[in-house]
Length: 146
Image: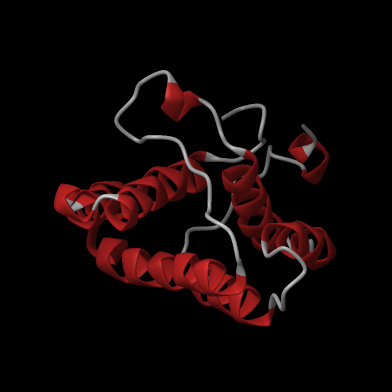
């Protein structure tokens, strides 16, 4: 994840999101339960709220896109080290908003949402950001380049 330029908080969000997406693609896996557990482990008492707000972000993305969101399996040690294009764009958008770079976030969301309106996704990310810890200072916007 270092090549994507995200901090530990955003890495946790990706892992949680992957379990949610696994639940969407394979409902019998009940990946959402693992996602909730991961949120509680990573964020303590704030975990359920962060989980719900991240789920809102993911659902907003799903509603905006016309094609499938490509994600890597959260349970594959090798795959989990690699961000897909869609995961990277989502993380960069979240990280950019956390670091007050809304322009960069809008550009990433435009691509992620395939040209559809990004307002709902942006609003959901802002609600998520409101309950997240402050970003680590050493990660710069320049490090988001591929």
